[in-house]
Length: 186
Image (cartoon, rainbow, N blue to C red; front, top):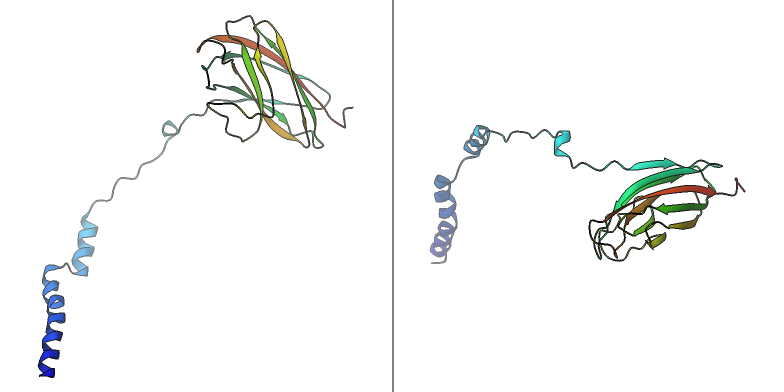
């Protein structure tokens, strides 16, 4: 009796395996079917597929000299940011120094805010900024100064935008003069 039960149990286990092979696909059939499928065309990326990054002006700061820049800013609206960024390259100042930025704002409709950030830091698109140094709510027709001491040569992001107090879309012009005091230029 025990042998009959054991044989019956073995048949129950083996039968689905034997019976299932008729319904399944052989390995050779699967390989043929796979080769018959046409591969998806390869997408070639061109420059048109890439997201264009705006050209960012870079000003190379040289020991013993000043540099100038100018631009137009736009008010982004309350609580938002829309910086026009200029890179200030102070990498030649290996021992660091103090960067001085003297800003003159035009007579346009918007007040302005200026922020200094380290290179590579993603700039905020909204909320209170956490910049290294700033000049905020600079009135039209007036000026401001930003001074920031740094320990070693680096590149800064100088961001200019319209003030949150101005109507969104209001514009103004600005110009600035930048220089660096360093241990080697004192």
